[in-house]
Length: 210
Image (tube, rainbow, N blue to C red; front, side):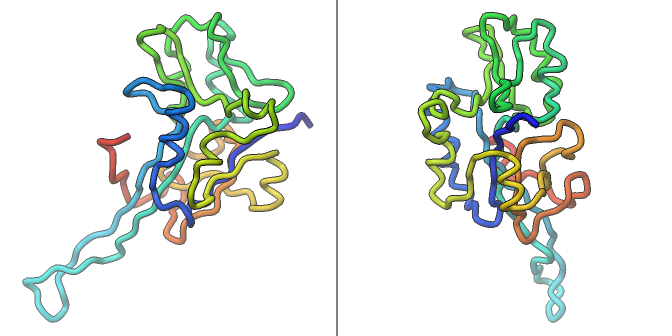
């Protein structure tokens, strides 16, 4: 089997600081409105009357946790499948999904096909852009900016089989889509309150920032 690089994310350790987002944006000199990596807060619960004083409300089953996500460099990437110009492709040496900018015509089919919202349209260039796993750094034996920037060490990278052997095979929790759509190259340690993708009772709490 060909090597497949992937990310590991520890949702139980992430504090939502977004250092990974800032590092990625800085490294790639991304314009306003484009973020290759995003951190969202997911949570839920309700308020119920206090048992001793019905005029007061108290929290019930409140929970919240953060999710850091970028291009998942999927084993079955829909962006590659749908791209009419073959601008999207998986590198044979490491499974990283990249874009050939010379072939991209900015049709945005990939953006509509990706369940993670990874491909993003650069209006100035008229091209699609996304996380490329910092392949320029990988080729120098260095790690992606997002993993090196994580102050909580909640992000790692490596061979997907090795990450699975070390951390397990969980690859989807709310609010991420079900993993069977694209087979994302990620391993997740769930937060204690994490919910199964597609069965969540919460919502994205910082939607205006995403």
